[in-house]
Amino acid sequence: MGTMIVRHIQDKMVKEYGMEEVLVPVEQVAYEMPRSYFFVSKGALENNEVLLCLAHGSGNVRAGQW
Image 1: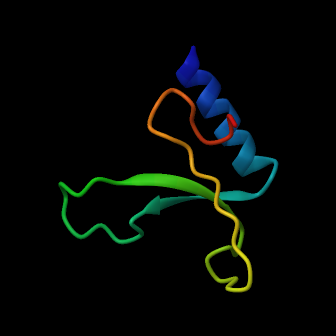
Image 2: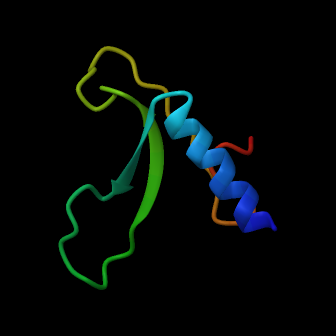
């Protein structure tokens, strides 16, 4: 159930609020390299004036559940 709620919230962030899911690091150097993701407003990586980053932890609370 928790996984379904997380996916629903994250789908809503993309579809209704126009956010983009970005993998980190952007370029995977090696297959074994750990990766994660975060959500950004469209154009956030091109905007270099102000950037607000909200990061979720590695526990049960994921992006969109603050």
